[in-house]
Image 1: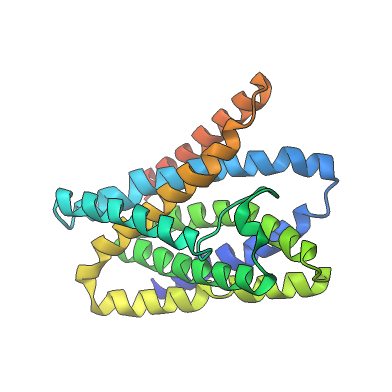
Image 2: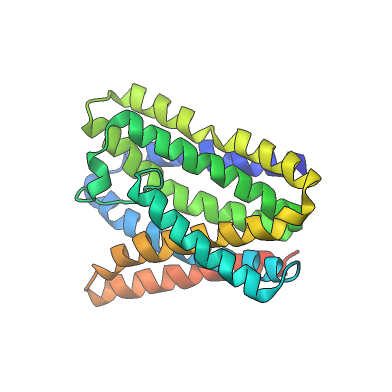
Length: 245
């Protein structure tokens, strides 16, 4: 279980960095089409992982009203963290959080990536299916996020090589989060349902507070159909992963 947790954490962090760097080599017009597609798919995976994986698994181990209250409290918590610019998921140049300095961007992302590692570890503590589904959702939403982070650092005057290196260092915080989550949850099994509920809250918050509003700005029918289809594909991916194990 530890090997799986570390492997998927590594893929989720450094894989997202490599993928975002590769996509930045594309022509701007191609990126303008790809980014909404990635965001649509990521939205589906986040919602699917939360509602088909984390919350059902949490409900199997704890009372329903307590799980619901924890999810609600988590959403409020992530709202507060985003207000403090520690939980930033904007993908637009106009986002107020983009006025933050380069170091604050990196600190906030490192914190988020650390939490992602704990989330992946919690998923694998339930079952391989929940762990893989959680990791896929993390990878899917980190890819467009890292593209935005890289562009933001360039806009703050960082060179391409330095921005890539700093992003990679920030992303590597996933690994200590995964290690801490694995060993802590092994000793404190009773905490697993609550970690899952908070993880579901973070996925739901990211999906509905940032990603979905971004997709609603698309008015063309063809683009709307693309976004809706990829969102459903993201949900279907998580459902198939759950069924496959």
